[in-house]
Length: 383
Length: 161
Image 1 (cartoon, rainbow over the protein chains, first blue to last red):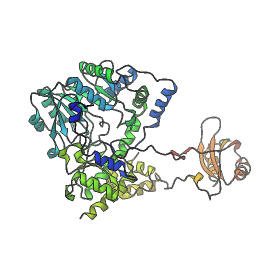
Image 2 (image 1 turned 90 degrees about the vertical axis):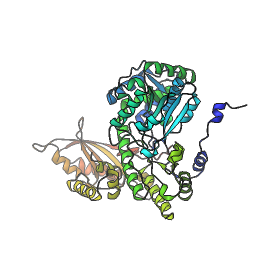
Image 3 (image 1 turned 45 degrees about the vertical axis):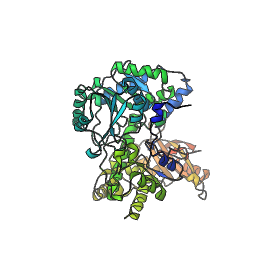
Image 4 (image 1 turned 90 degrees about the horizontal axis):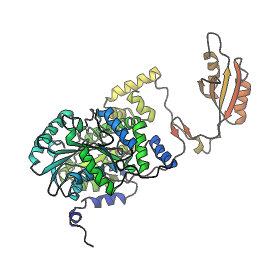
């Protein structure tokens, strides 16, 4: 059987072999993980278990449980003063991942271009291609890994349909202040470019308040906002995310969703609904803990000579390893082989991130300290 | 709660240097703050949480929760009599409780006998104690926020995007 051209053409990730190496090794201290090290808070797990006991095992509405959509609507109202109607403007998806697939398939015609500032999460490009679009990667490495109006203008043309913005950003941890976002928004409005805003790390912003993109002037009708439960509530395995946007876009996304997914598993939706009710305190607690780890990591890595700026969000630091003379992949591979510490080469997130590695501090303080000792040893051998 | 206290409450062995890095403070300032907390009594002591079930050589201990009904004293209320009770070394905790009895006293002893002796000979015969009800503790599941049974943690895959 011949595989379709579009899938055939998709590049398998260049660092798959490195991932396999990590997975095959025992007793590794892993700073390579893109998910919280916390277990889902008990009250949320309990709600999932209870829903099973009660016999909630059916399909739900395609859009998702009404009580969950209502909860999300209220949450967004409280936190960001955003008004999204639970009936028409919110869709529950299988994580933000599904939501991104839906939005791209909903808006892209063959040949349409989608801007993807890099380094970025790995799925943005491939999902754009699957939808028939062309990803246009923007190298942000010279601008502190931030997208700027200037960079935007340089890459926009008549075929540009949308941009996938992600902040706080995986892998760099950078985020934006209101003023920076306003400038970006102006450019997008001017060129009528849809903002696909992946804000799944929004709750994990440390130095200032997270600004939801649709709260910017005139942005709401030009934005589809994505968020989920994975990172904030340590619920990665439950696979619940949501998309909020203009009614006609959400309706289009729902069309695809109803044929491909039907609905998100009811157990997960029940648990997510509980997360909104009783999980906010846990979010704050986890955030405080992440923040301490962030401060420790930034201070220590800089003192080891791996230059890194203070990331403002998510749970990643993105130090520069150019001083070692090694490539990202070589650095990561050698660190793994010699010291059994796993990190992700920056190049996994775009070639422009050569010379950087992503370190996840979603790991216990003891693990972080041990890993730092090992990295120190590793670096000393290279002097 | 102060962030330094929050860190120490979780890990009493966290070093001044590490706390300083975690909170972006100067080590000297952290040291001073901790000294102040200790002096004020906000930090009373540092200790390890030990799961005694796992220590085979230790002599088994029994623990009892005792409900104590007392007659409050004029001007002094419950304070004086509570002090008389909690000063016994056998008493590990003592709380004033609302409801059908007044003090909840936790007592530890080598065996059933020592605990009942304490209740019979020391506690019950105190002048203001009107009555007691002793509950022996059978099994500890969780204590001071720590679950005593070590469960195997679900392993995350070691690397992901």
